[in-house]
Length: 396
Ligand SMILES: Nc1ncnc2c1ncn2[C@@H]1O[C@H](COP(=O)(O)OP(=O)(O)OP(=O)(O)O)[C@@H](O)[C@H]1O
Ligand code: SF4
Ligand SMILES: [Mg+2]
Image (cartoon, rainbow, N blue to C red):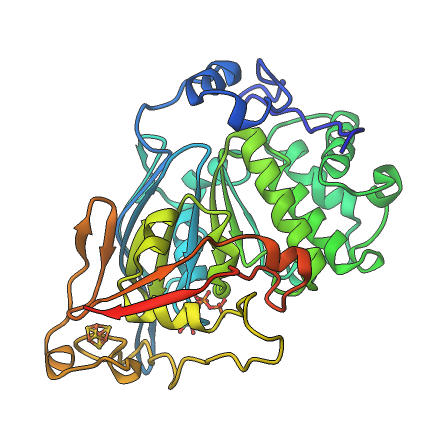
């Protein structure tokens, strides 16, 4: 984007541009220390986000839905964590629970959320409010439902700026138009005065990203940001998110059901199944040796570039468990092709096999995935993000 005018990153307290204001240059060319110096911020030396044993249950008349059941991970500034799993595995509840936006009275939440050295777990929604938008923000799955259809785009963009950052209307408009331009929206001044339905799906998602980025958050949750979009637009939106994340040196949690999407975009991946983390590793390490049968099954459900275009994908047999009554031992056991008696009686713990690589399985596989690429997006492979991978499985 040659004519890119990026939304200046604002100081939390004053609303003024931070020193270094507009985003610094690409991460590749600069050290993390240099970037921190450029932004001139006071930051804790630890990870940006640390989630410890997070539990999020919903109490219903008929029982308790254990949507998130003891999840731990950490995320550093400037890094991307991929959260992968089938529908219903708890990805959205995890993201919302970390942000503290699940406020209904039937939500039971335990564990710790340490953000930038501060424990947010005990804060009330009112106390958390200053963090939303400014510190952490979310790009929602479906911009058609997350954007208000009867409110003009401009107002949706400037609301937080005028209310939370106390900017004047003209200042907020200036920043919002720059924000729209920075996410690749043509004629941003005109779009500012339009309603969401006047934009295409891809443009709406760009608006969703602009809104999430408007107050310069340090942590971005992108919850299936491309599901409703066609393949070419999916790749554009993912590229845009990655570009913004790097330039702003944000931590990003990229949620998806598609391992192919995170294969080339995440620094670390957690695979979720039935509310639990079942495998966790830095991306390269995971693809060098997938250990969890569920991750293997997810891989097999992705289109491969080397296979003929009409190759039938292998769906994962069976259905995800009812989270009110999950299987008592290994939660994947009813669907696992490698199941043995022990799997049905003893719950496998999440064990760290090699430094940084953990999995939850008594009888792990050893699957190597060769050179994931983004070629699938460029050639329009059906997922929009094929790994282009080939696998070689060895049952340990
Ligand atoms: N407010 C709620 N009350 C009760 N159960 C809920 C609530 N929200 C989510 N759940 C349940 O929690 C589980 C996890 O849901 P979640 O939306 O996090 O899944 P997901 O991995 O994001 O799936 P998808 O890929 O379809 O978005 C599901 O069983 C869901 O039905
Ligand atoms: S513990 Fe057993 S059932 Fe569970 S994933 Fe491993 S092999 Fe499969
Ligand atoms: Mg979801």
